[in-house]
Image 1: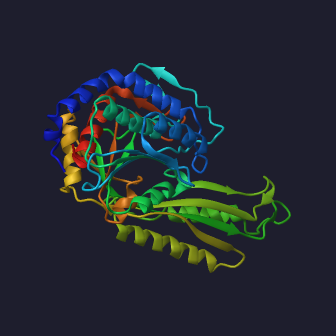
Image 2: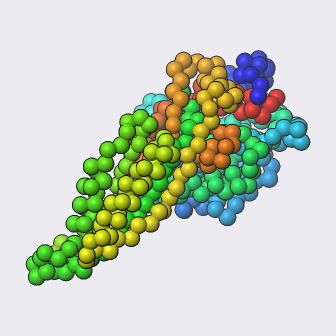
Length: 387
């Protein structure tokens, strides 16, 4: 990798960096254009079609979608035979359903709207980076693949990134871009396991069959038992019941009910312990009469990490320092970087600016740090791809 300070001395790079403050409005407008196209996980096709068109308009080569609606485009390097490619990705899906009101509200540097920060701004950053390379006539040594990938949110289980990594393998450096998270470097991927737990009972009439087991009541007891788990603060380990469903009517003893359970830990060993505790709880319920329990894994995000002193992490920090970020947070998180990191590949996740209220209808993106965020992305890209 080329030192960030060396990259920053290049006249064309300096010109591109100096231009970013003047492009904030354009980048925000591009983020809004992306955000306005619904893209729930598993239903990203419309947004993918738009991004495929934009990639083609930008002059990227080999622009295409795969069967999942990942969108690919290649910025050609001058020496691809001797330099490993760089893959820069940002997920295009959101947690919001297709029926969500996507109305945008502007308040100064704040842009409010579902999915605007996570991750419409991240995808807009890919487009802005291509434009900066073209405008500055910057030619890297390595091919740079730009990828808008699907399936990062919810039950997508990182399926888009799994396909990306399967396609490119171990050779590239992977840079994962999030719209928020400015000043943070995620080089450690936390492990995640997700389960659906279903309860079945005989049920009946709320009056005439009072005393019969209720699937909803059993579900409630199960949640209460989980809530008594003791998990360590370090390494951080968490559990969450995010969805519950079941029952027929207010005056029916429920015959079926289900919950969705999310388990996470910075430590694979502690995650395994937590999973074992849940499995023991399921076994306890299964031993009872008149209750049937189904326990199904519905998601697995593998853990992995890149050492904090690894060259890519050091260069990511140097890029942040160069653009004026004095306080850098090294974090563990669950992102698309989980997939390459879990395989021992070189990867890191970085952010472009600050955002808040993620996964809420009043989500917002603060454009204040966009010039710096784009600067760090340009510097880190060229440090990796060469120039």
